[in-house]
Image (cartoon, rainbow over all chains, first blue to last red; front, side, top):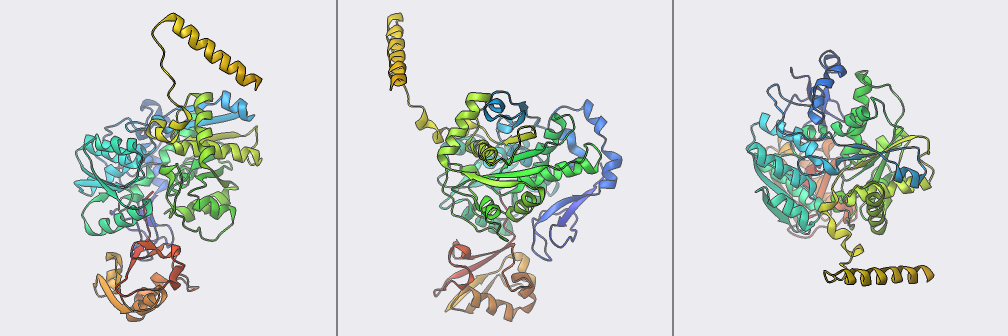
Length: 419
Length: 91
């Protein structure tokens, strides 16, 4: 594969070749990977995909990879679940759940972005990789760094969920706990990337890292039979994923792989950390940063790097942004589990809860095709819902004990019904 | 009030390579003015055409984003550190 991409400033448009850097040295705005789409039209053919495995690397021409790149992980290729019970519950005719709760290897969509980031890390000769993380990214960096032979050093807020810390530690990564919230961690990492010759995936490798998110969008379109949906509901932390799904759809249209059509992008946040949804709802020119206070720790970014781009996309697409409270998040996690058998983490509860809210606001129509993006696994945030499921008293291993238990349960249910 | 402004590598070509700039200022706005007066080429990277701090430039007073401290009018104490971070990443 010849190199048909390079970094370009999202504001002034200046191009920078391929370097480990996240911002334009002329105007200090963010950089992103830009492609030569004429070249891509020649080398990337939709029909070539049929012989490739169903994972994120089947779209390799559309990603910033190197010529000698060989996939080592079957990352991505997650189910697009056609909802039946939840769709019926909500009165929707065409509802899909893109389920990255089962993304390989670390059970969140962050496996996709780390996939492309580590290709860049190898290309630029970094031996140590790392990240600032609310948890899922640290898991993904630790897992893939271990497999690919990088040293890993991740930076996290000190009070992160225990499961997310354990799911990083097990891979042998160095974990640096920071007394502060994610935005403090992130600011420190900007200084670390400035000082140390490390590949911080979401700092100096960020343009390459965020391209991995596009594969979530490519898969949605392919799994819909090479069609775009009417609505997409996406959780927002830094605000990158929603913009990259939009970029993916636009690229597929440019390449002629799908027919163009309007797609509304809806952003989902927790009310306890909702700078982007607040900015959209109040029609602000610039979002106002917030101090996060929510159980949705994976979305708890008060100063979102892609906030301005996410707000612009949502507005221009005719979509909207909403946010839900912690109790609404817990209710939505349970609803998704009980109706679709999908156990999502708090971020998925945010997305499902916001979808319900958008329906109530009549922003999503029953006959439209709607995709809800589930980006992480519930096993990582069990503490957020543990209080909902108190441990029941144990019974003796005897049939009569079970019968007594059933009588008590049914009695309680009957009494409850009477009450 | 004597304070120190910490300059990221990307900005040092405008500060003759200096990683830190000491100045005297009562507010963050004054500190930024002192900085850009001394290094005029930095001006357009700190403020946009309307005089607002550029959207992608993040400014911190010690550990805190100045937007939580009332913005650039927030007061400085002796020995404070003002940190400039172009285009915060993460997420």
